Image (tube, rainbow, N blue to C red; front, top):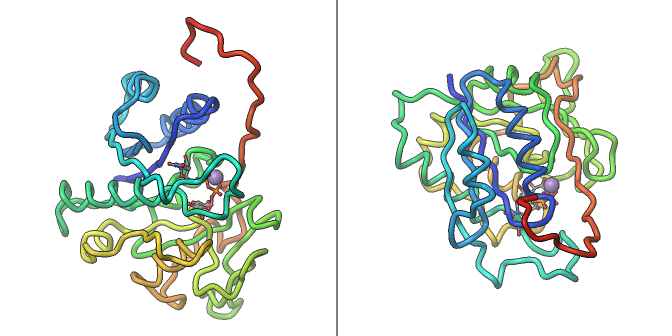
Length: 244
Ligand code: UGA
Ligand code: MN
């Protein structure tokens, strides 16, 4: 089974550091196929060089967020959806290049700024339809996690610091979907018209129900991914002659 990790990314001073961190995590994962989608018109040298060094499978794509959908520097980050265009182009790549019932895999949306344990990928490999697990440091809570019925072991709700009434109160980093399911519903994509903060929930609703979710990471008791966010550096001078 192949884990298809889809990473939207955009140019900023910390981009190479972020991509270096997660690319080296992925080097420790067997059977990984990394799909990196740049939010730009053309492939950039920084990302091309970084991918060129890898010893595992990757696909390099571009998809520019339309300017009307893009966050302005002064905007609070919840104002616009992020990563929509990029994830959709990656979904289209999967649907064009892979074959239902032949290619076997699990799809995971791997934002470039989070922190991922290698252990997470062992869990992702177990996903039959849709698997879920806790995510640390998100939504104002130290951890968000699916809540299980202790008798049945099934997901009955979500521990979440923000709108726990969402059909699926799960961050993008908190679920994996089997490739079969992605390929068998070729029209399902992320959407700019989703309610703010409901991108994950509105996507998952198209594929599954709460009752069907597969709780992973030791019955959702272990944290193997953290919704970290890197501080924006205040750079006084861009020094010539270095690729940073
Ligand atoms: C939260 C979720 O963790 C995201 O998965 C979700 O896309 C986002 O909310 C949302 O509501 O849209 P957050 O940390 O606020 O995430 O988002 P970012 O990490 O800033 O962006 C998510 C991904 O999109 C990252 O991989 C980032 O590199 C990429 N991105 C962001 C772009 O490609 N272009 C941009 O202009 C901004
Ligand atoms: Mn993030």
